[in-house]
Length: 110
Image (cartoon, rainbow, N blue to C red):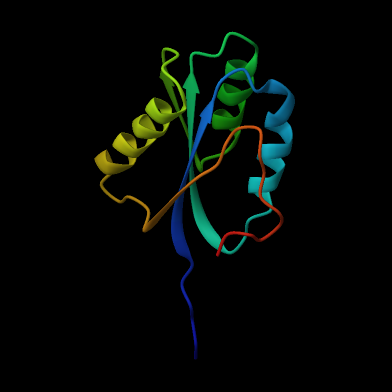
């Protein structure tokens, strides 16, 4: 019997004032069935309602971890996500980045 285990993948998403795009982003991640996702959302000091959306997403989806930092930019937010993943006891096998105004097509991640 061939039982292929799904790969674990950490997706780090920096977010700064991206509310108009977050619903499409979330829906695209919900359509990824080829791997076990751990979604790291880094709120980079958003001043719009992105933080409210992100908090609700975290509360509704066990795969999501929400981190906060003052506005320090895209690279700093990515590094915050990397530092978090390094601190996990059971960190994902693979890592990728996704910007908050982008999305993945269905089953893009394997």
